Amino acid sequence: MTTSSRIISALLALAISLPLFASCGESASSDSPSAPAGGDDAVISADAETEPAETSMIDARRAVPDSLPEKDYGGKEFRVSSKRGTLYEFYTEELDGELINDALYGRNMTVEERFNVKIKPVITEAGDGDTQVKEVLKTVQAGEDAFDLAATYVFTSGQLVLNGIYVNLLDQPNIDFSKPWWINGVNDCFRVGDKLFVAVGDTSLSALKLTYAIFYNKRLAQSYSLPDLYQLVRDNKWTIDDMIAMISDVYEDVNGDSLRGFEDLYGFTAESATNLDVYTFAFDMPIVGRDEDNIPTLVYNTPKTVAAVEKINQLYWNTNGSYIAVSDYTEPMKLFREGRALFTTTHMTNCYTSFREMDDDYGILPYPKWDESQERYLTGAMDNYSVLGIPKTETDTEFAAIITEALNAEAYKQLYPVYYEDALQNKYARDAGTIEMLDIVMQGRTFDMATLFSSQIGLYTFFRSLVAAKKTDFASAYAKKEKSANKGLEKVIAAYQENE
Image 1 (cartoon, rainbow, N blue to C red):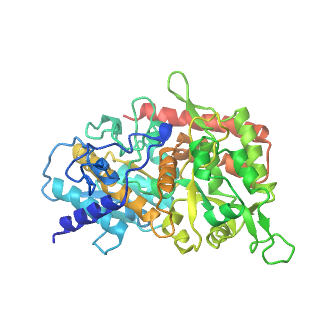
Image 2 (tube, rainbow, N blue to C red):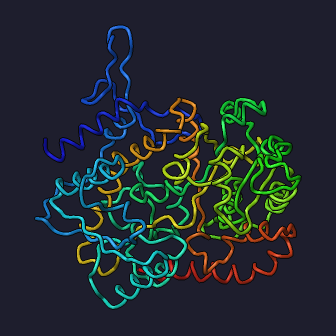
């Protein structure tokens, strides 16, 4: 059997096992298109005369055309600047029988065979994002044609945009941002006027793995007589007040020492760091918005943000059922994994790592709404997901754009479904409700320009810093930051306007 045949066989097997995501009302989007029944790979019922054909998620995704021209690049290398730690987004050397690795290999084979190219990583070994950004900046400013695409950590990448080293992606006709493999919630935030220099698509798998959600222990939920949490989400009644009420009295002195400590059982556990950033997204409190002329402007200082700082301070520091890690940030995952926490907040990476060791079953929920009037459930991703940019040193931008579009399209068709499947196996309950919640979480991802320009605007971690310090005086703290934040934003806008 050829390599391509093995990959197709594996994907078809997955297509049979995984149903199409349930519709989530307003949370649904074009990320889950429907394919016509009866296509080449449609899943047909055993009794076709009495039951309708079922379209799998993979079939639906594969049915979306990419509209790319047919090209033969004669074996040309497509070079991607990537960190060793995020190489899983672009490259693996061989099949090894591991589900995700083989799907990545298959995605690359599809693109390589279609366009007669060879995908080659240009690897930065250092784990921090700054090192790679410095290498990318130095290389491009020196005029070296060293790579065709750069994938860099978002929170370190603002300086690349400010230094004008990337081409305008909106000028590339073969990059189609109307397609579902572009995560346009973030791309819209990073755009100013008719210019967009970095973008996030489905090959940026870090944006999937680092998406935050609420995880809950199903055994403890039953033990404490919690309502059907999935139905609470469906009924648009899953709010921060509901969550606080559920966890407030959940505490057990497990080791009997009459002291609250790590060995006890809690209603909620989290670290006092990155997960706090997500409440800004979850409560629909953007830092950077747009004025009537679609120009970025600061919109963070509102009564709602003031109230949210107070509310999350209550959740973290003034709720009996909460255990918050302030030094050892591994404690929350240990508590949850060992069945001593009802709720925790973390990113999806733990589905593939830490939570595989759990004895208890767990469920997934979106972050709660601020209140029931909030239109949708929203969430965010940790600030080291990858953004993509094509350098100005690229000698053939059509080539770079075509292969970039193809990699994102095939990630949407081949990689995302496999990541979902891998998350849902083992201890992850493979029921329709869990799949529905996972879909709501992913469809609710939202972003902010302040993440990309964290060094320039300086407000991305502002909410986190206040709550971690147990402070509630948002207004006075913000007043000290506002002038420099506005100057930083003005610098960002000017850089977009000047960059051609």
